[in-house]
Amino acid sequence: MCFVYVGGSIANDQETPEIKEEPVLDVSAGSRYTLLVDSKGDAFASGFIESKYEYLGQFGVESNKLEDGQNEWRMIEKVADVGGRATAAPPFAKVYAGASANSNSGEQHSLLIDNKGNVYTFGNNNRGQLCLGDTDPRYIPNQVSLTKPAIAAALGEDFTLILLEDGTVYGCGSNEKGELGLGDNIKAVNKPNNGNGLNGIVDLTSGLNYAMFQSENGDVYTTGSNMYSQHCKDTNGEPVTTPEVSF
Image (cartoon, rainbow, N blue to C red; front, top):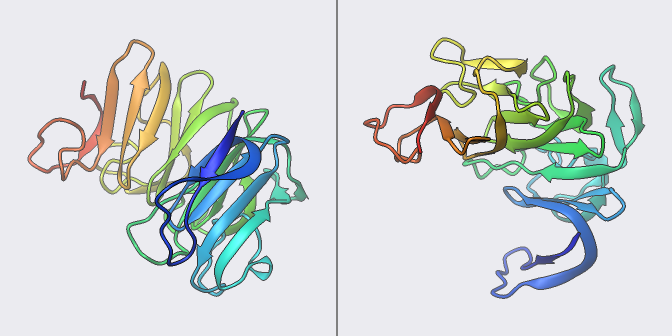
């Protein structure tokens, strides 16, 4: 458990952190918004939306509970189970806020993991990045159907990667640049897919359109865009479409 330090307000940068007097389990910074889980397992969202009419759900609350512009901490009170039935939010353990290269504050998606390893996604879903079998946005967290509990996740601009406790990695959303490691022929998937061949993975992270995976033997695999040699190797700017050991 730790205390989270935050800074700044709309149109005002803050050069030194200021403590938010709330012990937290996890926190994640996205594009123009933040997700936080407190010591009781309650999840909250805070940040900025340009318009409730363009908002696609990345806060995890319905638009009628938000204001255009700045929104301070809103509690995520409801989720939907795998059958689509609304229920009270469970205690959460981890949060993941999304990022986008586009300045539109409504285009991100988000993910929560509860204290049993269940995964919930919400927000923009234009490429199937919510892993729910369609491309419709979600305004409250919806549970993803998975075979085993999850221990971590990573969000790119329009894709999602989920690490299960058995060391396998499932992905959904865009694979245009090989972000999911599914090769050249699959451009997008809207259900969890582990065709990347990864196993024995202990950690993962992502950028806007590439991803990295650490294996239990210390190898680091990369996949996706390599326009700027972000894989730590030169591919003449060409993407890597299946996971390869980079270092």
